[in-house]
Image (cartoon, rainbow, N blue to C red; front, side, top):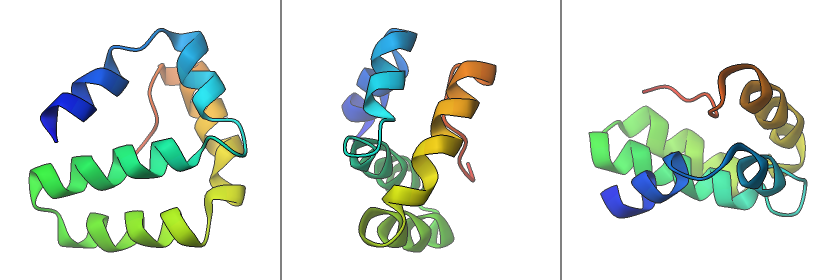
Length: 77
């Protein structure tokens, strides 16, 4: 899990933004799931699973905005 988290954290900003596009935003949902599993956050795990199946079409814009502002996607951790 930590290897996946490190991989996503160390990506260049342009690649992170590409991964946040509507079809590829599922990758960020997997990243969030891995972060929550790594930290043992039960609420985060449930929300990440919901985002994986239900909401990827909604959060892609939020991910792009937070990447441009902070350089990373936001999450509960």
